[in-house]
Length: 116
Image 1: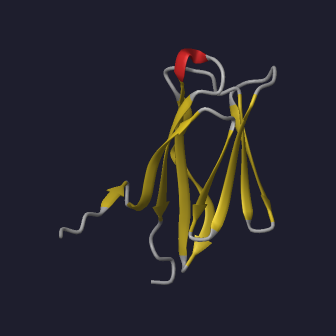
Image 2: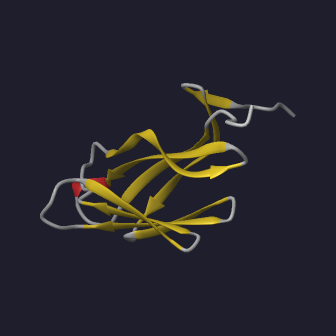
């Protein structure tokens, strides 16, 4: 068996995946931390809001309707674990440009150990 590791700009990729969604909500659990994502529509721009309630991280993703895709390719820090930053990136393609049929790609990354 071969061990494979991936790195992006010095960050270690520790998990990645693709979700095929036919509903506006999904949940990913990273090392016991639930991440709830919900797609919403309003009259504003494409954006996301992030909040923490208890141990759960919530993402509200507004107006993600582009069939070419949109998201956050530059990873954002979502937590700290064992002296390392935990980062998250995602990209969403809305199939047909309408509705709740989407393909969401995501990655979890770890920064360098800040404790040496």
